[in-house]
Image 1 (cartoon, rainbow over the protein chains, first blue to last red):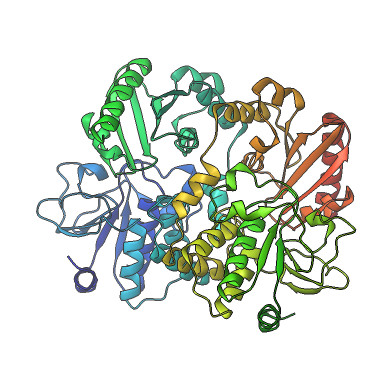
Image 2 (cartoon, rainbow over the protein chains, first blue to last red):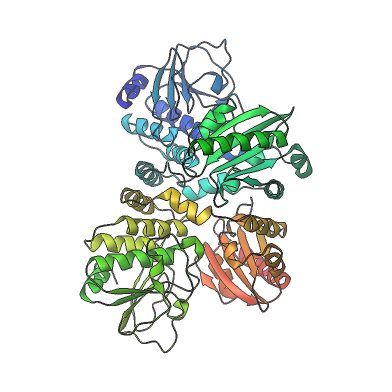
Length: 315
Length: 315
């Protein structure tokens, strides 16, 4: 579906249920909130779904309280920042009149749905920004805050190589419309507790580097020692990436029941999505993730091996 | 001096010696390099002065090798990102035909010089960007890289509250002209050594928080233990700032001979320049610094006291 088509699709129908993916972050949350407000602005009825609670970091985004884990009947489902119902945590039995996908991941469209997917776009928030501009609705301060948070989350606040001129043009217009860059950065990146800093340093103490692959890990023991939870590890992927001469950076979290969650970040041109796919995960070229049932040490060995192979196969 | 006046001043004369301040950072270095290239582009002779070596972090900026600590005679001195000869480390006896100041600090003009100062501008790089646009010279990729580095340094890569729509417009145009946001972020923020991470965690271990004031300190002993130097503390000010419910964040470095260097950052509306001025330092509302001769512990006590007074006086 093209931009004019998705705009006309939204205009023609009514009663939309918007949802991001499970474990929602800035792009999923901000994009959903901004589009819901814009649709309300043109007289549409909307509702917001999230299987998981909105993380504390994002509980300043205008309208976040509107998310609910209820699934009211009779809606058009809009999958935001994901393309599959399972990824949004929608139960198999739930019925919707239709499904629309708005996403920037390299992905295929959910069967039976219509899709507005642009994998060249740095964020779903950019796609929503383009939709809102075409909807003939005022860009309110609330929309601007949500879209700025969405776009800045997925560009690492304009640090990653998906920082396009268009994303910076959008950022400028969003600030003109009332978005507050400093407030957003502060809320998302600067609300650490002392315990979280201690957890970070315990994790950094575990850093292992081999052949351009850096792995930082947080164990159950570290969580217990510091009284922290997985929510406190948000943005920890930044730190192994900060090391020089690194091609792949990984952050591992030991979850309950022997499961290790891994986030991968590429520095340079390694496609970390391919590495994640070896373990049944997915994502982008530059940012991906997966889960394995293994001990932390075993998970590290598996990743060192897989990443070294991926690096070798590039020649 | 207004923008058209400074442009006409630069057009009319020749033989410019550009210098940033001592301990130069991205804005001083990038602004000087971009303006020097633009002036060369309209046929002017230029030279670049820096009393101090260019820090390793910035040794990817196009043209950085051009800085020298020589002071050739017969030039017009251009003070970039500072307004006093002493701040640039120019010896008292050095003679120049004239002096021009291009700065965005709240400051007074060097006596006997002409000044283009705009304290509302987020970076000296923004002022140079405006000058270059008026000079009728092509915005080259090299200029774009230097200006993007300059502007992003002083806005914390578009995180601080000086992130204006104009700075984001400029960023978009600079990326169109060839600036590479990801490369710049990587070079400036993501070239850490293991030893630097260890130093960070030792410093974070020293964190003290009282009444909304957070102080992180790095001692001589920590440098010795990790084999690091003061250059490795670049950007450490970010970390005490990351704590929630903080109004003032400080990063202290124990230098040789009993001197403590302090960088202050404001979170919220405390004017940290006023606090720095109590100790003979200066800077901006949101970012300032000073040096005192004292032990680390004594310097912390002095700052807790001064910052608490500044917070109280705001009511």
